[in-house]
Amino acid sequence: MTDRTDHDRTDHELAATLATEAGRLLLDVRDEFADATTDERKAAGDKRAHEFLMRELQRHRPGDAVLSEEGVDDPVRLSSRRVWIVDPLDGTREFAELGRSDWAVHVALWEDGSLIAGAVALPAQDVTLATPSVSAPPAMPASPRVVVSRSRPPAVALDVCRALDGTLVEMGSAGAKVAAVVQGLADVYVHAGGQYEWDNAAPVAVARAAGLYTARIDGADLEYNRRDPLLPDLIVCRPELAAAVLAVTR
Image (cartoon, rainbow, N blue to C red):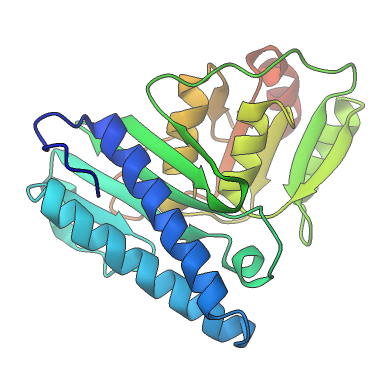
């Protein structure tokens, strides 16, 4: 970690730093376990990144609660004003496949009912996208690009792609998909079929900072730090496409 004091480091800066450093740790794990099985590589990555983030959040924000995919859900978070929502390794399958770059680390902060900071690190791409300042994506091409899972694209995403007369872009983790929309490599991400808050809290924070539209597939607001962290569906898209996307997903 850097030598800056916690008094000087904002929540935005801390989210970006922790996501980036967890990503570097994961690249080291990849190298260390290059000759291991994919299951061993996945397990080591999940464990080490989770332990790193928990340790550093305890060190730098000891009064805050944490909700992590790899941790035990502590109900104290439900009465906490500030909760860090983290996915230490988003896209374990892609991480375990040496050479793939479509996996991520998510670090977000929820405070008093809202996401107020977030960072998505794409370690194998040497990129971290972080609030508060995220550039808006460049101009959209004539045919909107809809980003989907390479193995199990949801039917609703395929319906959206047909309605927009778009093209499909296959990609791995949720964080990588949202990052693709933020970076202008895709224009629409629609998910249905199961996610949890840690899968999209940081990506949504980053997308909002870039001026993108985010919602449930029925247009409802995305809410975080709920008793049940299941958050099964999601839209992230360019704002000018939101009405057309919702016309399908609703």
